[in-house]
Amino acid sequence: MIVIITGVSSGIGLANAKKFIEKGHTVYGISRREVLLEGLTHYQADITDHERINQIVDEIYAKENRIDVLINSAGMGISGAVEDTEIESAKRMFDINFFGTVNISNRVIPYMRENGFGRICNISSVAGVLPIAFQTFYSSNKAAISLYSEGLNIEVKPFGIRVIDFMPGDIKTGFTDNRKKNESNSKYYGKRIDRSVKVMEKDERNGMSVEYVSKEMYRNIMKKRPPVRKVVGVKYKFFLFLYRLLPIKFVNYVMGKLYG
Image (cartoon, helix red, strand yellow):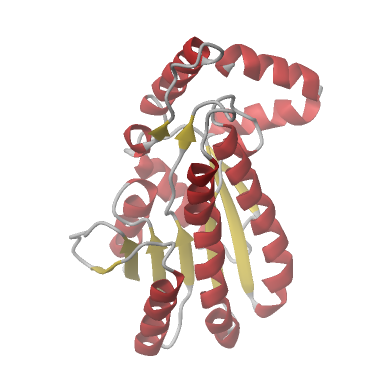
């Protein structure tokens, strides 16, 4: 299969590139940083540069005459109080995580439709269902990706294209250290933000390996009838099961105790 992976320089993107190459697929990667990985054809580009991204997709299709899988891994995070977050920073995150995903997906859909087959794989998060205080913009962003994925899946399903929303929990990646942190010296939020981020980063550093996540993603992508939504990690499936059963007010109380 012909596979395109964004955010391929680290984390889930790099792990997926290694997995698909290991399985014998042709893999193209896109990221801002250069990547040297045997078997990977790399394009250096910013996911928000829509014109360049479109050119890359067109080049790949012209060479291969098909695009089978798109994995949207490019992303960033913001922590801090909503009140203290600059709107431009929040917009930048949506431009990368959400609109970057939308743009490249729009570009591959006509090619997938022409071949009657395709897998568009988006990465949201359990945080898109369970709101995390002081990561509110991140949770909102991931919730948007989830609903976008499910709605898009309905639209493109008649063409043989499936959209999969992967929802991992905490993962050990460089994402933890690369997260943009707003200043926490506010007299209203400061200590609460510090405690929340400390808990959050501890959970991430003790989370699932990217190898486990890529293995789960590969297994589901290759299914004849892939799921629309796939929670990655057994304990996170349990958390979301409880979320559906318990009153929202109680869930909000628990999340406040953990992160608020």
